Amino acid sequence: GQQVQQSPSSLVLQEGENAELQCNFSSTATQLQWFYQSPGGSLVSLLSNPSGTKHTGRLTSTTVTKERRSSLHISSSQTTDSGTYLCAIDTGGADRLTFGKGTQLIIQP
Amino acid sequence: GALVYQYPRRTICKSGTSMRMECQAVGFQATSVAWYRQSPQKTFELIALSTVNSAIKYEQNFTQEKFPISHPNLSFSSMTVLNAYLEDRGLYLCGARRDRVAGQLYFGEGSKLTVL
Image 1 (cartoon, rainbow over the protein chains, first blue to last red):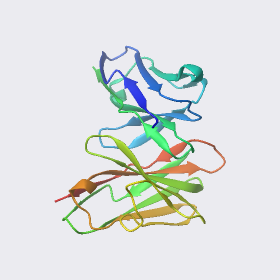
Image 2 (spheres, rainbow over the protein chains, first blue to last red):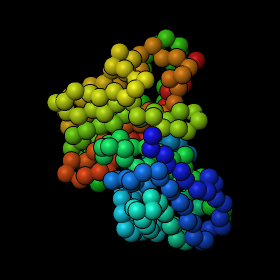
Image 3 (spheres, helix red, strand yellow):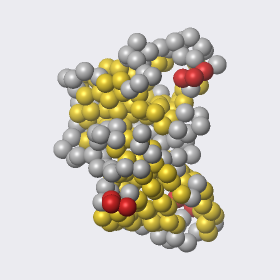
């Protein structure tokens, strides 16, 4: 089945530093979403980016479809960015997502 | 914006009892809703896909008899966990597909189920 691997599994940075998160997947994805999961469990959709580069605020996602990888760049990190970042791709329908195990990001003041 | 509310946020129930959770889309029309479960080990499983006016499609290992879903209109869906046991523990998330915006799911805050 479809596999999604995220790296690193955890990342500790100082406030103000940039974060780079990676997502690799085993087969072609027609849809790819990055999510933020708060410690309480809420899932927030950050970016939908099946190909190319997208920006929103301090977030930049770059997906290279033929290489089956995507990255999420967080610039000027803040303590409130701490949490788990999940990459998810579709497996045959826009609602059928396969999730990676996430990257736990800790931003220290 | 697209918002999805789930209720309740947390439930503690005894083994063998049932729990009903609700999912409300606010600010958009949710023509399809996907119900997921995140296990205590943080892995995600798709339970079922629900589309208004279409049959609900359950994934392998999940059945209508155990997880009945109601999706009566474009803004509301509910799912019940019947006869809950320890293996049903986890965070249940509903993801709503925003009409006319292909490919993006918006999730609620989740309903956490603890079974004693």
